[in-house]
Image 1 (cartoon, rainbow, N blue to C red):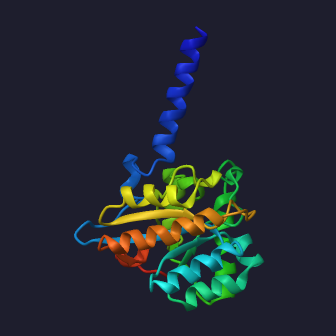
Image 2 (tube, rainbow, N blue to C red):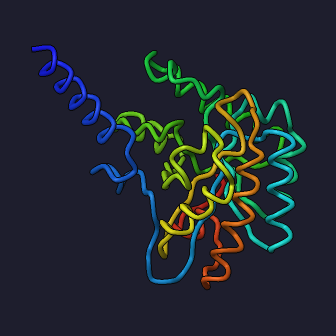
Length: 238
């Protein structure tokens, strides 16, 4: 009975992950994890920043290779490093909304996540002069009501595929890059993390992975685009 109970719990958790967090779930049309595959293009995206010095190091690498990316910033991190958000937009990158605090508990309290999104919109508008039209929910949470809430606020939900599933543990950058390059297909939206939740954290191996991923994909004939270009949606609200 205990074994059956454990199996049932595992099945329930697996089903919940598939429906509410997996980029390949049936709701992927409402929360796209890739774009059209007509061209050899890829959208490189970053979550949980700004986080210094790693976000600036990533911006240096992107500038060196003339690559533009999309950064889904956390509101509290923007307040901590406003100059980095300004630098990203000034360099031609796109900045989207990734909540205020990146805490899972906001999904469990009615209206809490909507309030976080709204506050982050205000922070980004004040700091950068731009109001995002792109949003990514922490952990790719895709509850249908939540996605509808984002769209009512003029935001396009954007998912993607993690460059490496174990990035949070910072395996070697070379290992993460090999996995990211191997899984990339025309129209891919790749996710890396320049921060950790809203707390920052060491992302030195992610920096290594970004350099090797960019160089590897360029060598394979890929062109980098921002998410709005890939999906044909606006980057910012009017």
